[in-house]
Length: 86
Image (cartoon, rainbow, N blue to C red; front, side):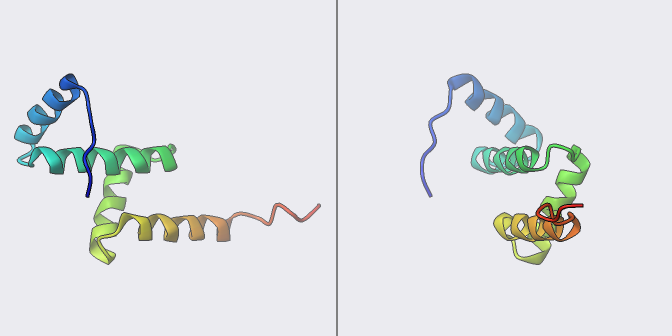
């Protein structure tokens, strides 16, 4: 666990959101980071789909990295081998 420096305005937004969603400030920050990480890795997914991924990660192992590795492996197995020449 470590410290992350953020701006005062973002901290105030965290405080507001954490109250609205009944989370601690740290829980809210972690939630936003998890959603943001998934959004960057999978920009084609919408918020509802990202939320389902978070639920699945929690159900399976609680580790988002395990889920990302599994999704990437599934994606790679569905993509045609790009090394082959038609």
